[in-house]
Image (cartoon, rainbow, N blue to C red):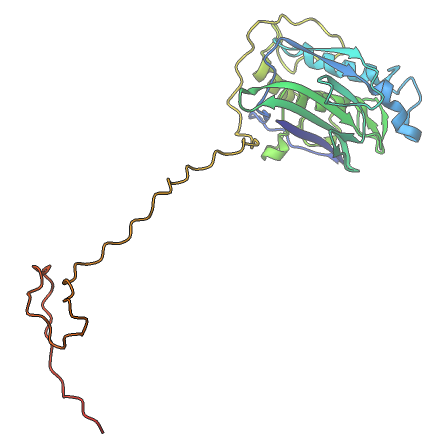
Length: 311
């Protein structure tokens, strides 16, 4: 079973901070202490054409892969029981999904799904709804090559999009977080469905990740935001995740309802009738044979009317 999650462009969105929990869990999450993401951004950056930035980027990053690896490291540093490892990939298509790898790359489609003009990134993950609906098995992200990508902090400078804040958002999907604003929450979060001036993980984003994978020992407050990637102390068993919302899954072809055994439909037994007399000529006068004990009925009074006459 696959599911799609995307980040749309709505520039300079403003959200009121809510003191209550607002993060939203997708349902499935990882049940392993680490997983590896293949970074194909540099390998697929040829798809950007004229949108390709000049390196180094505004924040000093020397490649798009470096920007995304930094975002993955920020998430890892805020989680106790999950580490996102990154390696340099070579898939010029960006993402494939059919190869069984977790990938990130520039691509206008992912497994046949096209990114619309205003979709900045699209993440897809797989899970098995029948054997283990709570656990992800594969996830990949397509970054829309139709935009001008760079990396910087501060307010969004449209039409140049900051890749790091998009990477933080899509990586949140990769670990099992959804969109708070689409669930009716009003909160400042990178995980909201529209990009905004928020350029780093917020307390609500981190709280969502730590709900799934625990809090690193000694960490308090809003958590780490830097690019360092300390190795978390993984434990064999991650914190159980809440029961997910039921996800519509393709059901196997339903077993047809048992067809009633084609036994002949019994012919209604006719009401007992007097055995006809051997003579086929109808007898005008009713037989004198009494009807078998009749079933009691309500008395009916028959009033004789005038005898019909011929005019």
